[in-house]
Image (cartoon, rainbow, N blue to C red; front, side, top):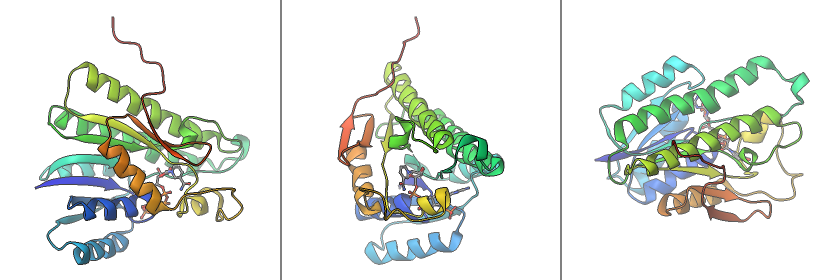
Length: 246
Ligand code: NAP
């Protein structure tokens, strides 16, 4: 009984990715703050495939202690893949940022992601078939006006995960580390980032499409799966230069 952990599974990309992995018969550990949403998703998955075990672990991952506690709670399960998807953005010029929102964003997008990645790599890197997938963004490779701090959090996700991928490969470990970098996607993200929908954006993807990109990345040997400036999904090798220890 091996499990795929998905943080931020109560809506959007994480929710649809949980359904996509469920259709493949994967047992799941679902994480987010909204417990009822996760319980409802568990019921939906039971209708799709009653043989799958779905574990609901509510947590506020902006709280560092809860991030550590979450990992402890997963220790009784045998894990195959860990997907750090939970994240949010803030759309405002730097001088006008709400610093309490920004602090929570850094704690979720970067601190929790680093803690959970580190603990998973520490325990599972030698295990065949394991994967760490961290959800960055096209904004993890390009700086966007009025989105500077969010972009910087996603540059961190991309650089950290690409670095982990190189380090694992250099050590001959079995685990693969990968970056999913979606572009504009029709989820709750824009409401939290800028208080409105994305109907005025020239193009976007549905979370169902991005969940399929997640599976495509999961199935591939590439490090990056990115929705590029033409709104196409591409699988790529690492982007950031990497210097091996001499
Ligand atoms: P979403 O619909 O807002 O989903 C975000 C998920 O993160 C929700 O399940 C939310 O659940 C969870 N979450 C938020 N704060 C949390 C916290 N403190 N602790 C635990 N879970 C928390 O947005 P989405 O678009 O699917 O976002 C998923 C990822 O894709 C994010 O990392 C985002 O940066 C990235 N992304 C999104 C877009 C886009 O345009 N939508 C583009 C590129 C990258 P609760 O509220 O229940 O906790």
